[in-house]
Length: 437
Image 1 (cartoon, helix red, strand yellow):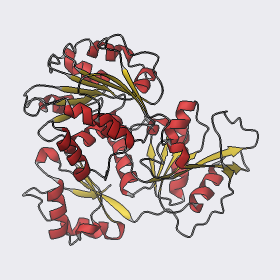
Image 2 (spheres, helix red, strand yellow):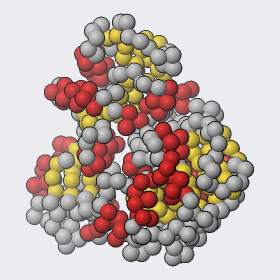
Image 3 (cartoon, helix red, strand yellow):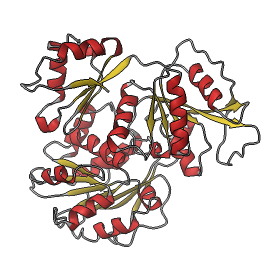
Image 4 (cartoon, one colour):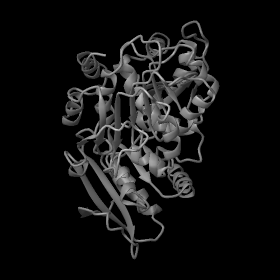
């Protein structure tokens, strides 16, 4: 693709109005060589590596040209969603565990240009003979440090040794790498270091909140009731704690969602959609939610439990103060609690339990049991809700399309009436079952 086309697509089809310095620097690198991009979470690195990556590809080649490997399903989906609107003429598919292998294999009926995948699922497709990677010329290993931490070194090695025609390799990492892995081309890597520039920490206010009791639930509740309206993630260290806190906040009728590795893939994806569209603007999460989630305008992060490592502290906090925005970090502590050296705060705060503009949910999420595989587009849904539901375009929130489902944010006070009104109607000559998620 031509660079001018890529950048024009970014400015017209994403929320970005101008490239940041890192993205501008990455646009200047050649579409050949080995590069290491050091960048913090939330700095816009996906668009940054996308520019040289797409620049190295040619539309309508008829074979797989580019591979992006990422360590989590959530990150795979996020990257694919970033690439699709800016990669004119190129087909992108996403492969990850928990997704239907049959549907993934079906998506190969027309050979994709780009595959975004977790290491294990990509290796599974290779071993089944579903794909030929001999034509791949560009590779991105995103969040390479996290992939090593999660134990994917062997899978990445086995995949990369099949990539014999690489011309462009980009590794991204939040921390400096000891060395480029031996299974990649032997070029001397060029390091592009944006790990310190415009650090999100400069835009964060880290606040200590002292809990008078060892059980922090009452203090957490007071804090949430004290915050201004916005989106918040509460981080805990264990699934059981996440469940307990979620149940307690739900009993208080707070608009809360739940996210941890014990939930199935659909439940996790739904939780992120409902956080992003404002249906459940409070999310209780384990550290699984500290990376790979594309959540705009997250106003605060709360550490209910102390992060277990400096990396966990950094990546939890990286969910806020993203892309030039400011964010508040709250650390709930109790008397005698061991506070790690890497947890530093700017000031103390005692929550009042009251706010003039409290966190609330004015949005509900409608679930349609039809999606991309039924040839339903976002435009079809918008037209349906306006023509048959009586909504205005401004009242229709974020639309998330999946293979066989669509999730749509709508005004909460109109949601149940919409379901009744739309029940007898057809969308694009298809009768869809619509329910409240």
